[in-house]
Image 1 (cartoon, helix red, strand yellow):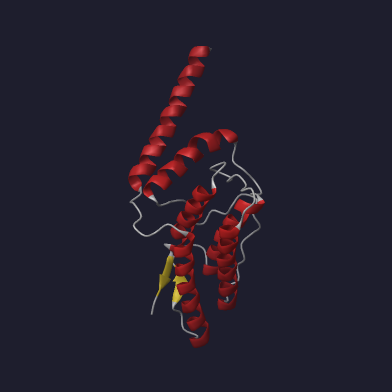
Image 2: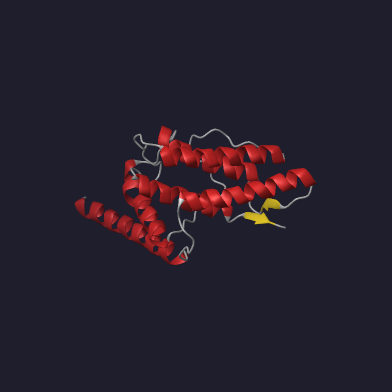
Length: 190
């Protein structure tokens, strides 16, 4: 009986380390600054493009992924907000202490995250299907506000639903990498 348990543990451990190795080697390092300030600058540029788009009735910005722009901005804002208020649902403690911890460590080392770009935060309200440019601007403003709120936040940060407890610096890195990963699906035309 104990022999079986040891074998199962070894197999599970091997799977965890294999997944970590695949994640590590499949991510190329990030070269831009990974700060909230840099992210807000990027979002400000997207805001200017969206304002131009709304005034000219031409499409200068769009999403190449499954989610529309507003859904991307809303989802990213939810993640930042939940770091301060608490995530609605969590992965198991075992997940957070194994796969979650390994994934965050790999992402942090590379300065870049890769994850399913159409997977919602567990337990979060459904993302809006609104495709109006005015909604995109509203959702983008919510994201920028969540980041400035996070920067000035002095309270206790809530555990991440998949990574567990993070320091403020780790959360900043997680938020920036998360947003950058989603912004990779945004296409701009000038």
